[in-house]
Every structure is written in C-alpha cells, then in structure tokens.
Length: 314
Image 1 (cartoon, one colour):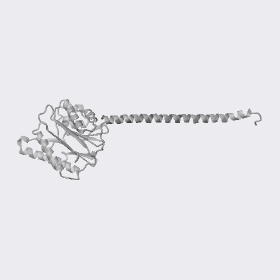
Image 2: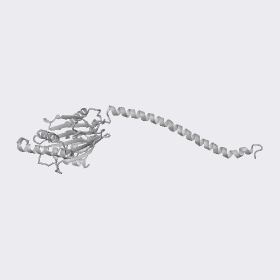
Image 3: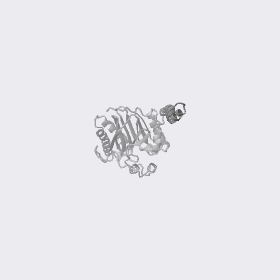
Image 4: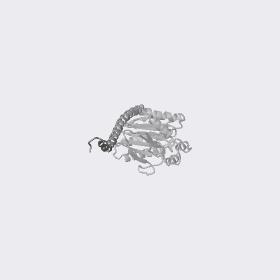
C-alpha cells in the first residue's frame, strides 16, 4: 500500500480529568497512509477491551494487501466487529461491549474512509474545516440535517447515544446499515483531523479550526493543543486526536503564512505603485494627444482668416 501524498501525522490521547480508564485507541502509520480512531462506548461493559480488540483486528486485516481500498476497509471493520461480538459471547465480563471508529487510508492522492458511530474526520483545506463523516446518533443526525445548531447539539442530554456501533451484533462487510464509506481527493496543501467525541463535544468547529490553523510543521503539537483545549473545557470524556498534514500544508495563522502574507502585501504595494506611475504617464499622454488634436482643429478653422489678412493673399 503506497501513498502518493506523503503525509506527516501527530497523535495525542488523554483519559481526561473525570475518567479513570482511557477507552480510546488511535493508530497512525504514515508509511502505509493508515489512520484510525476508536472510541470504546462509555457506559458499556469493557469499552477499553472492545477498542483494543478492534485495533488489533484492523491492523491484522490491513496487513493483507488488496487493490480495492473500499473492500479492504469494509473487511477490516467487519472483522473488528465480529471479533468483539465473539469475545463478548465468551466472557461474561465483556457482555455488551462495543466501540465506534473512523478508519482512513490515504492512497494515490485520495482519502478513503470507513466510518461507524460518532468519531469524526474533518478535511482542512484553504482555511476551511469541513466535517466529512456523519454522526450516527439521533442528536448528531439532527445537527447534520440543520435541525439543531452546533451549540444545541453539544448541550443535548442524549448527545452520546449512537444508533450504529461496532460489536453488538454480527455484521458483514457489505451490510448497508453498518459501514459508511466515502472517498474524496486529498491535495498536498490539505490536512486531515480525526478525533473521538471527547474533542467534538467540548470544542466548537470554530475553536477547532483556529487551533488547527496555527499548524507550523509539527502535527504532534497540533494534536496536543486540541486535547489540552478539550480538557480545559471540562474533559467529560476521553479525548483522542490524529492530525495528518499534507506535505505542503501550513496553517493560515502560522508564522510562515503570516510572513508570506507580509511579503505578498509588500509586493502588491510595489506593483500597485508601479502601475500607478504607468497609468499616470498614460493619462498625461492621452491628455497631450487630445489637446494637440484640439489645437490642430482650431488652427485649421482660423487659417483662412489669418491668411486673408496677409497683403497679396488671394
């Protein structure tokens, strides 16, 4: 599995000040272009075991090379689901365990995404942050449809309920009600942000965007800043972040971009002054031509009268 856009990623995860166990799992491999965020479902038995089981299954399945990326993603997520379901059936302490996940593969300038639940993947490009995955939850669905504002959804008491998960029942890779799959182009000047709901429940899209756009070359620092910001907002859940920067991506608020904007402004000012000088000269030339034509016309009209006054002129 080879990637045309060679990315650099950074990861960060934290239990948060209110939780005792981190039920999130994250995985990033820039060489393979594989990125994965898993969130063991809070309130369910053994969410951390479910998340680890899913991680192990996905890594195992992706080790088998396949040209069909969609098929590979679907097979990996289905294998994770069925491994969790089987383990839960054998161990009473794991009964009912499950997780949600977002799996992304960057290949040939394209991002392929397999997604179940309310973990998220965002595309960052041209100064805009765009959520590329749907929230498979009652509240998240209403937010995606525009029936709830972001603030209303974040404060909703049923925010953390999901209607799709990985592990509570047997699933096949082609189950239409299971895996959401999509793919989209990935430019070298773009970035990806993947996170558990511990981030998106704590930070608004605007706040996330401002942090992401400070990126200046260290993706790990960006991931850490997002986790710290989520924890500062209360840290009600585990929070995990993967930030994947294309080779030419720079945040619009980074020092490098600020310097580039300054250089551009100076160049634009210089070019503006030069064109003003040229325009001024053109205007004066046009005025001179018009005045000359008017003078010639006036002389032509006056010429007969002036000549008639000359003695001997007929």
